[in-house]
Image 1 (cartoon, one colour):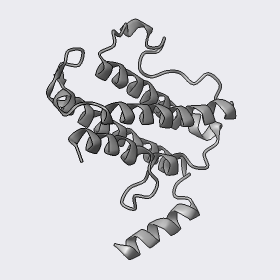
Image 2 (cartoon, rainbow, N blue to C red):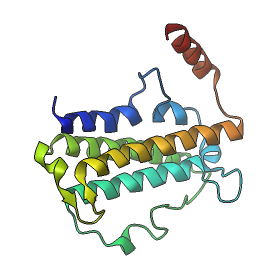
Image 3 (tube, rainbow, N blue to C red):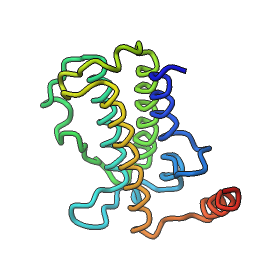
Image 4 (spheres, one colour):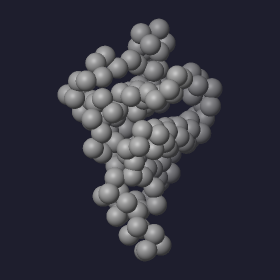
Amino acid sequence: MSETSHLAEALEGLLATTNYSWFVSYPTAVDGLTAEQAACAIGPRLNSIWGIILHLSMSQQFALAVLRGDTIDMSTITVDGIWPSIIDPQDEEAWQKAKFDLLNVNHALAEYVAGLPAEALEQQLPLVEMKCYAYIQGILAHNKYHLCEIVDMRHMQGLWLLEKNLDEADQSVERG
């Protein structure tokens, strides 16, 4: 398997795949949350889960543009920069769309990386001033950082772990 395939598999698998037993996936981390719960920031200068998801989606859209070599006008990314605002914290449809959009952009990013020729990984990306492989590894780290933040937000809200997740965690420990 090529290095681009490995990186693409990690991009999609380490965020979206639910069958890894050694960490919490994004779908599991947001499972069962209402729009109101997801929009709740429990204190000043703390992110909401929904806000984190909008940020991850925007970050991955940005990353895809960087990797493609697209011209990016930083002033047009969003009005709020790379942390878009939640329009209506009660809007269940918008919450579901936000969750789905992250999976879609993550998939598109993984597909793009999978199609890169191996030599592209050594190329310098001018906008971010780093080599392509290092930038992709940074995206992986960024995704996992914010996924841990989502889990922390659930803990702080008293919404974690759900019984289903506790049973799965217990089974994972027993297998380990």
